[in-house]
Length: 255
Image 1 (cartoon, helix red, strand yellow):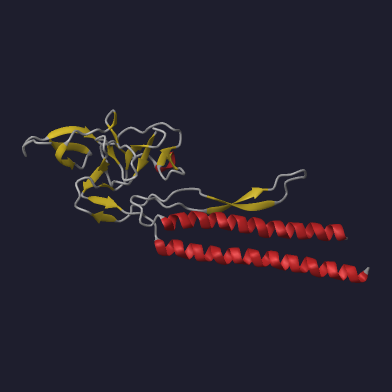
Image 2 (image 1 turned 45 degrees about the vertical axis):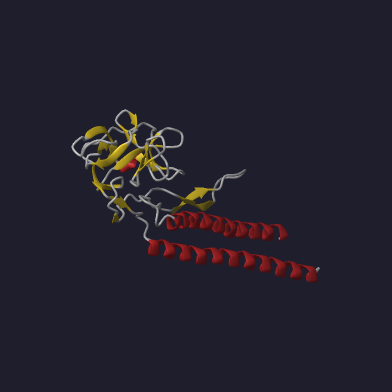
């Protein structure tokens, strides 16, 4: 009798504790979205619960809910005008090709570009922008212009206004969303690890950057709902503990 009661308590505690853990995982996803509400080109993540079997020494007849990040929202964020020649935004679908910290090609919507000390065109995070044949390096220049197809033209340092040189072209891609996955570095990667071919139909808008597509009100609502859900799990654990203590006292008196 005592053994069966103990098993029931263990099961109830497991349900409450696992529920609390998965709720915290869901909070982490939405908190990360909210923290990036002002990050240029950021793409928010979804979260959902999925039933998973509890494997052990016996037949896996029990399941628990596991929180996962099944997909990323690829809707376009707001276009913010800056008037800066190195700021670009993708108009419609598509991505700017960059190189991640491992040197592998990845994809981003962040168009807040800069020229570093080595003359390399990089993103605001310092990631090299991919061009035709590799990273883009620029000589000392008076001015720069990026056209809608990603072509980069400059007036060299000390050059006249009519001495325009077209140096390179930013690689722009537009793969199917099913072939994309977002990794922990915040960049978009191909699922099979292979680089995508350039798409000549992708267009840029110069003098603009794209804001995050995070809906701050929606994320706050999710976080508050999850906080209430976590509080419910904690109360459940407290109730289980109180019931177990009460049962123990009754058994002591009866013995």
